[in-house]
Length: 254
Image (spheres, rainbow, N blue to C red):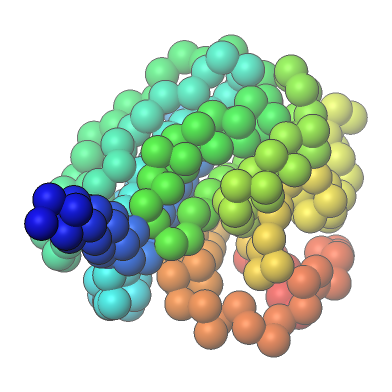
């Protein structure tokens, strides 16, 4: 009798754990670049762009569709020891939840950072945050950046760790205007190549590229839909043609 009760109890616990694991279909973590190259106006364009995307009816429908729910969090990053949570992990239960997140982002202010660009540290930080969501079926990092790694360990040194634990990484790259010249930055189009080669992870991973932060709002909305609706990334080349002068200034497309 006691043995039967013990077996039944184990079965109940196992079923409960399985139900919890199936309840969350995706954990999506967004990382916003706040390094020195991102001035207050650019940060506002990032923050307001993401806020607006979360209020879009199509994005909300994609986030709220079942089966299961999704969980969302947002952090900002710059130097090796400069990461800050803006929105802690939140179960997306209704449009009201997304409205509250959008409102919180609207009133978020940019804090002083080291000024460096530590992509490796940002990936490690994201890994630790996503591993707290290991009850979710899919773990995804959506990272924005406007420069190459110039602080701490390189992003490629930690990509294997993220891949091993099943974390996918997509990127939104903000290219420098080709009419401007910065000796310390990659030439036009090379930053997109850099993120393809060193940052993104996963069979459906992609880079969304824009020129300057003015196009961030449309790009992050497009990017969220590609991450939330798998059919939007099926049958796409893993690497589009390189961004070139005279190409669509909003994104790289196949």
